[in-house]
Amino acid sequence: MHKKLVHAARMPIRWGDMDALGHVNNTVYFRYLEQARVEWFASIGCDLDPVAEGPVIVNAHCSFIKQLKYPGEIEVLTYVGPPGRSSFETVQEIRRVDATDQIVAHGGAKVVWVHFPSEKSTPLPDRLRQLLAAAD
Image 1 (cartoon, one colour):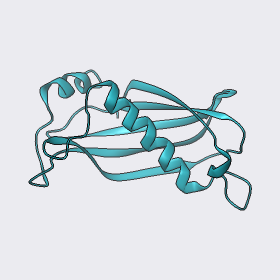
Image 2 (cartoon, one colour):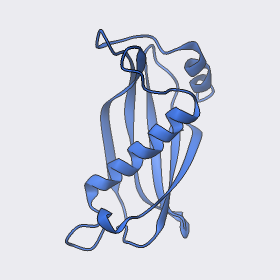
Image 3 (cartoon, rainbow, N blue to C red):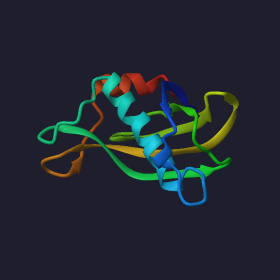
Image 4 (cartoon, rainbow, N blue to C red):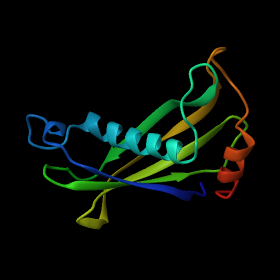
């Protein structure tokens, strides 16, 4: 898949992100990916409006490469793939800010554009399609 970097988000590793084994719990990585996606959507004007249209995640995945521990700060890089009729793929990388040469996890999600009241997919808006087309 061709991909285009669209967003970089930094966030702290919080004490409460860790589990009884002393490392960041695997479920929290999905929260990091989600937070970065939400920030990217907000930065391009895709605010969630339950009476209109917007993005819905239909699947998500994450591969854990290296443990994260408190304290620290991470950077999540978000890439997008080319658009389909109503969907596109995101690919994300998580790195510690103090070791950006090492990917600690990578994941992504399929995003489908949905008309919320009818709960049905709908074509991607032209402005979003143009942004994503550069990933072709």
